[in-house]
Amino acid sequence: MNLPFTTEEFLKVFEKYNLSVWPVQYIFVLLAIFALFLGVKKTNYSARLITLIMSVFWLWMGAVYHFSFFSAINKLAYVFGALFIVQGILFLYAGLLRNQFSFQLKYTIHGIAGVILMLFALVIYPLIGYGFDRTYPLSPTFGLPCPTTIFTFGMLLWTDRKFPLHILIIPLLWSLLGFSAAIYLGIYEDTGLLAGAIIAVGLILINNKKTKDQSSQR
Picture 1 (tube, rainbow, N blue to C red):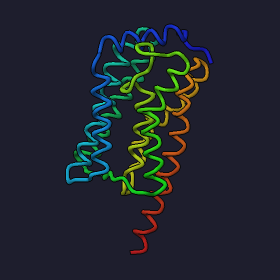
Picture 2: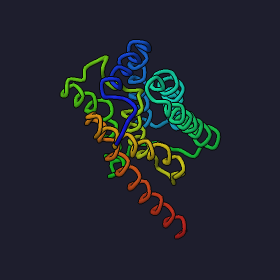
Picture 3: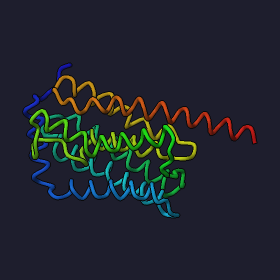
Protein backbone atom coordinates (compact mmCIF):
# COMPACT_ATOMS: atom_id res chain seq x y z
CA MET A 1 0.00 0.00 0.00
CA ASN A 2 1.51 3.31 -1.12
CA LEU A 3 0.66 6.35 0.98
CA PRO A 4 1.57 9.98 0.15
CA PHE A 5 3.14 10.45 3.60
CA THR A 6 5.42 8.69 6.06
CA THR A 7 4.70 7.50 9.58
CA GLU A 8 6.74 10.41 10.93
CA GLU A 9 4.70 12.94 8.92
CA PHE A 10 1.50 11.28 10.11
CA LEU A 11 2.52 11.53 13.76
CA LYS A 12 3.53 15.16 13.25
CA VAL A 13 -0.06 15.87 12.18
CA PHE A 14 -1.23 14.45 15.52
CA GLU A 15 1.29 16.64 17.32
CA LYS A 16 0.16 19.80 15.56
CA TYR A 17 -3.50 18.93 16.10
CA ASN A 18 -3.12 18.08 19.78
CA LEU A 19 -1.15 21.22 20.58
CA SER A 20 -3.50 23.43 18.59
CA VAL A 21 -6.85 22.23 19.94
CA TRP A 22 -5.94 21.52 23.59
CA PRO A 23 -7.95 20.96 25.80
CA VAL A 24 -10.71 19.91 23.38
CA GLN A 25 -9.57 16.27 23.37
CA TYR A 26 -10.14 16.06 27.13
CA ILE A 27 -13.55 17.70 26.78
CA PHE A 28 -14.40 15.01 24.23
CA VAL A 29 -13.42 12.29 26.68
CA LEU A 30 -15.78 13.85 29.23
CA LEU A 31 -18.55 13.99 26.61
CA ALA A 32 -17.97 10.31 25.82
CA ILE A 33 -18.21 9.42 29.51
CA PHE A 34 -21.40 11.51 29.73
CA ALA A 35 -22.82 9.56 26.77
CA LEU A 36 -22.02 6.32 28.60
CA PHE A 37 -23.82 7.64 31.68
CA LEU A 38 -26.86 8.58 29.59
CA GLY A 39 -26.96 5.07 28.17
CA VAL A 40 -26.84 3.51 31.62
CA LYS A 41 -29.26 5.92 33.33
CA LYS A 42 -31.75 6.21 30.49
CA THR A 43 -34.03 9.25 30.49
CA ASN A 44 -36.50 10.73 28.02
CA TYR A 45 -33.70 12.87 26.58
CA SER A 46 -30.87 10.31 26.59
CA ALA A 47 -31.15 9.24 22.95
CA ARG A 48 -31.20 12.79 21.62
CA LEU A 49 -28.29 13.90 23.80
CA ILE A 50 -26.20 10.86 22.87
CA THR A 51 -26.98 11.42 19.20
CA LEU A 52 -26.01 15.07 19.51
CA ILE A 53 -22.68 14.11 21.11
CA MET A 54 -21.96 11.59 18.36
CA SER A 55 -22.82 14.17 15.73
CA VAL A 56 -20.47 16.73 17.30
CA PHE A 57 -17.65 14.17 17.24
CA TRP A 58 -18.09 13.41 13.53
CA LEU A 59 -18.61 17.01 12.44
CA TRP A 60 -15.48 18.01 14.37
CA MET A 61 -13.39 15.23 12.86
CA GLY A 62 -14.50 16.21 9.37
CA ALA A 63 -14.29 19.99 9.58
CA VAL A 64 -11.35 20.35 11.97
CA TYR A 65 -9.08 17.31 11.80
CA HIS A 66 -9.46 16.31 8.15
CA PHE A 67 -9.87 19.76 6.59
CA SER A 68 -7.49 21.73 8.79
CA PHE A 69 -4.77 19.22 9.71
CA PHE A 70 -4.73 15.92 7.79
CA SER A 71 -5.12 17.74 4.46
CA ALA A 72 -1.59 19.11 4.91
CA ILE A 73 -0.14 15.69 4.03
CA ASN A 74 -3.00 14.03 2.15
CA LYS A 75 -5.35 15.86 -0.21
CA LEU A 76 -7.85 13.00 0.05
CA ALA A 77 -8.51 14.38 3.53
CA TYR A 78 -10.98 16.77 1.91
CA VAL A 79 -12.98 13.77 0.69
CA PHE A 80 -12.71 12.07 4.07
CA GLY A 81 -13.73 15.28 5.81
CA ALA A 82 -16.80 15.66 3.62
CA LEU A 83 -17.84 12.08 4.39
CA PHE A 84 -17.37 12.63 8.12
CA ILE A 85 -19.51 15.76 7.96
CA VAL A 86 -22.19 13.78 6.11
CA GLN A 87 -22.03 11.20 8.91
CA GLY A 88 -22.52 13.91 11.51
CA ILE A 89 -25.54 15.20 9.61
CA LEU A 90 -26.95 11.66 9.34
CA PHE A 91 -26.75 11.34 13.12
CA LEU A 92 -28.57 14.64 13.53
CA TYR A 93 -31.28 13.74 11.02
CA ALA A 94 -31.91 10.17 12.20
CA GLY A 95 -31.51 10.79 15.92
CA LEU A 96 -32.81 14.30 16.54
CA LEU A 97 -35.31 14.89 13.72
CA ARG A 98 -36.68 11.38 13.22
CA ASN A 99 -35.99 9.95 16.69
CA GLN A 100 -34.80 6.63 15.24
CA PHE A 101 -32.35 5.84 18.05
CA SER A 102 -32.84 4.54 21.56
CA PHE A 103 -29.74 3.78 23.64
CA GLN A 104 -29.67 1.66 26.77
CA LEU A 105 -27.12 -0.66 28.35
CA LYS A 106 -28.52 -4.17 28.55
CA TYR A 107 -26.60 -7.18 29.82
CA THR A 108 -26.71 -8.98 26.51
CA ILE A 109 -23.93 -9.79 24.07
CA HIS A 110 -24.72 -6.52 22.29
CA GLY A 111 -24.49 -4.44 25.44
CA ILE A 112 -21.33 -6.11 26.72
CA ALA A 113 -19.63 -5.88 23.31
CA GLY A 114 -20.51 -2.20 23.25
CA VAL A 115 -18.90 -1.68 26.66
CA ILE A 116 -15.74 -3.46 25.52
CA LEU A 117 -15.43 -1.38 22.34
CA MET A 118 -15.99 1.91 24.16
CA LEU A 119 -13.49 1.03 26.89
CA PHE A 120 -11.03 0.02 24.20
CA ALA A 121 -11.43 3.42 22.51
CA LEU A 122 -11.09 5.42 25.72
CA VAL A 123 -8.56 3.39 27.73
CA ILE A 124 -6.90 0.49 25.93
CA TYR A 125 -6.31 2.33 22.64
CA PRO A 126 -4.04 5.03 24.15
CA LEU A 127 -2.29 2.46 26.36
CA ILE A 128 -1.33 0.42 23.29
CA GLY A 129 0.06 3.56 21.69
CA TYR A 130 2.07 4.36 24.80
CA GLY A 131 3.43 0.83 24.70
CA PHE A 132 4.89 1.64 21.28
CA ASP A 133 6.30 4.97 22.53
CA ARG A 134 3.59 7.08 20.91
CA THR A 135 3.08 9.49 23.78
CA TYR A 136 1.22 12.78 23.81
CA PRO A 137 1.26 14.91 21.72
CA LEU A 138 2.49 12.41 19.08
CA SER A 139 -0.51 10.16 19.61
CA PRO A 140 -4.03 9.86 18.20
CA THR A 141 -6.13 11.23 21.06
CA PHE A 142 -9.85 10.70 21.52
CA GLY A 143 -11.74 12.92 19.12
CA LEU A 144 -9.55 11.80 16.23
CA PRO A 145 -11.07 9.43 13.65
CA CYS A 146 -9.80 5.99 14.63
CA PRO A 147 -10.51 5.84 18.39
CA THR A 148 -13.73 7.80 17.94
CA THR A 149 -14.97 5.45 15.23
CA ILE A 150 -14.37 2.49 17.56
CA PHE A 151 -16.31 4.33 20.28
CA THR A 152 -19.10 5.00 17.80
CA PHE A 153 -19.44 1.30 17.00
CA GLY A 154 -19.61 0.54 20.71
CA MET A 155 -22.32 3.10 21.39
CA LEU A 156 -24.39 1.94 18.43
CA LEU A 157 -24.44 -1.54 19.94
CA TRP A 158 -26.49 -0.07 22.80
CA THR A 159 -29.38 0.75 20.49
CA ASP A 160 -32.45 -1.25 21.49
CA ARG A 161 -34.59 -0.91 18.39
CA LYS A 162 -34.21 -1.68 14.68
CA PHE A 163 -31.16 0.18 13.42
CA PRO A 164 -31.01 2.13 10.11
CA LEU A 165 -28.14 0.36 8.33
CA HIS A 166 -27.13 3.30 6.15
CA ILE A 167 -25.75 4.93 9.30
CA LEU A 168 -23.04 2.24 9.34
CA ILE A 169 -21.71 2.78 5.81
CA ILE A 170 -19.22 5.62 6.42
CA PRO A 171 -17.85 4.25 9.74
CA LEU A 172 -17.44 0.85 8.07
CA LEU A 173 -15.60 2.31 5.08
CA TRP A 174 -13.32 4.30 7.36
CA SER A 175 -12.60 1.20 9.43
CA LEU A 176 -11.47 -0.76 6.38
CA LEU A 177 -9.31 2.12 5.19
CA GLY A 178 -7.90 2.83 8.65
CA PHE A 179 -7.06 -0.81 9.27
CA SER A 180 -5.10 -1.13 6.02
CA ALA A 181 -3.23 2.11 6.74
CA ALA A 182 -2.54 0.99 10.32
CA ILE A 183 -0.72 -2.11 9.14
CA TYR A 184 1.39 -0.09 6.73
CA LEU A 185 2.20 2.70 9.21
CA GLY A 186 2.65 0.51 12.26
CA ILE A 187 -0.18 2.19 14.23
CA TYR A 188 -1.20 -1.14 15.71
CA GLU A 189 -3.90 0.20 18.02
CA ASP A 190 -5.88 1.03 14.88
CA THR A 191 -6.35 -2.67 14.22
CA GLY A 192 -9.20 -2.32 16.71
CA LEU A 193 -11.09 -0.59 13.90
CA LEU A 194 -11.55 -3.79 11.94
CA ALA A 195 -12.50 -5.80 15.01
CA GLY A 196 -14.97 -3.12 16.06
CA ALA A 197 -16.52 -2.98 12.60
CA ILE A 198 -16.94 -6.75 12.35
CA ILE A 199 -18.41 -7.04 15.85
CA ALA A 200 -20.75 -4.06 15.55
CA VAL A 201 -22.04 -4.70 12.03
CA GLY A 202 -22.53 -8.42 12.71
CA LEU A 203 -24.41 -7.92 15.96
CA ILE A 204 -26.53 -5.08 14.58
CA LEU A 205 -27.57 -7.23 11.61
CA ILE A 206 -28.52 -10.03 14.00
CA ASN A 207 -30.50 -7.63 16.18
CA ASN A 208 -32.31 -6.16 13.18
CA LYS A 209 -33.32 -9.64 11.99
CA LYS A 210 -34.52 -10.53 15.48
CA THR A 211 -36.53 -7.32 15.70
CA LYS A 212 -38.06 -7.97 12.27
CA ASP A 213 -39.02 -11.54 13.21
CA GLN A 214 -40.63 -10.35 16.44
CA SER A 215 -42.61 -7.71 14.55
CA SER A 216 -43.86 -10.23 12.00
CA GLN A 217 -45.13 -12.51 14.78
CA ARG A 218 -47.35 -9.83 16.30
